[in-house]
Image (cartoon, rainbow, N blue to C red; front, side, top):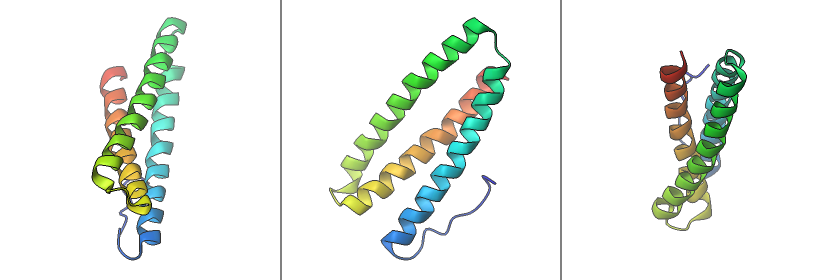
Amino acid sequence: KCKKKFNYEGSMYELRKDASDELDLWDKELNYVYKKIYSSLNKKEKAKLKKLQIAWIKKKEKNAKKVAEDEGGGSGSYDSLVYMGELTKYTKKRIKWLINNYT
């Protein structure tokens, strides 16, 4: 499902819809990978991973917001498009990190 290609063409509404759909798709994949890994860990490892994941989420959102503000130019629609794109980028990287560090 994550191999789906999004057009990112058309109106700002269509661009934001594609960005939102892509983010949702990758977020579901992240949750799937995280749950698989989490279920295989002992109690101590689970606590550590959960703590790392919460910190990562906060950092991801903060970084994406900063990029959106810097690159979005203050346009609400464009800012949100950049924000979702950054969240997607960080989510993809996190999936790879989880797989590389826990499998």
